[in-house]
Image (tube, rainbow over all chains, first blue to last red; front, side):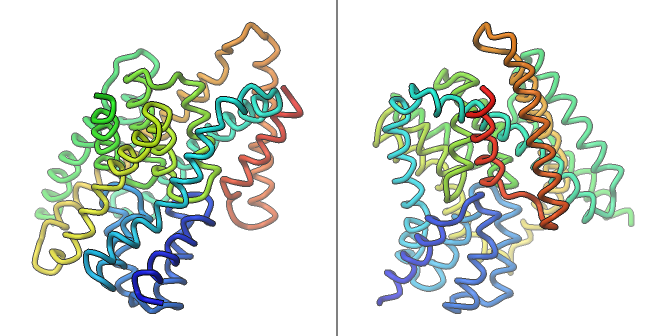
Length: 189
Length: 185
């Protein structure tokens, strides 16, 4: 098998069989790319993870693009990324195409009502876990908590009172605030 | 120009979704509601299906939204939009890292962005929880049922954590909730 087909099928397999999104894929990606195929060194994998976490977008895409690029240049990057995306894409096309019809089946409608509750729970859990991880790592817990509280309050007001403050604006503001605040603290130290 | 709008909206989501798929949820919500592509109930279906199917969650959500608005072409452009920023970043950033100090700026900015996002995600969760209890139909009993399902799911995930020593995987929670939904509603 050529490198390109290998790249495609490795990422397609992980994309097709891993539930729970990019974070759930990380350990599988590491196993495939570092241990099995030796496409990346452990250090490179760690670097990809750090870049993936501090840049926007789907984490799985970051990893596929980087590995593909390293193994086979631009073509490799495209093929690996395509492999990662294609299974999800096809599956969701299929689901979307039949969803309208299936929704009218009472059992499906009831199941989806139940799933809504789980989705809310998962979002709350993700937010709380994110805060916990930040508090574990940051040297400055107080500032992190203030940021968390302020933006939680602003978002809640925005949502409940229909202020419609765009999330992107809050991300930009918090980024600028984080930079000015922490770079000054670093200089003072 | 629905195709262009889809592409740009999902490009925006891919550009600002820090912290994985959950960071993207507030952005996806804003996009589909403000464009009138979905109502709250359809949004919850979208999120439920995206999280319970394999693969990157943002890609799933983009494909489904795109297909709903403009068929296969819509699905393709929305997916392209959401993955393009990551793709381009990975072409450039690793090469720059050694000689470029920009990552220091980003690291400092991330110390503000991460707690902000945790707050935004929690607030979105609280808001969606409140929305759950605003029944679309005139069924007055549904509030109590939703509350019961919520409590049972909480117990389920705490129980899972206590026995298996690790958090319940999303797919298990979603399957459990689907079964509960069929039984309870």
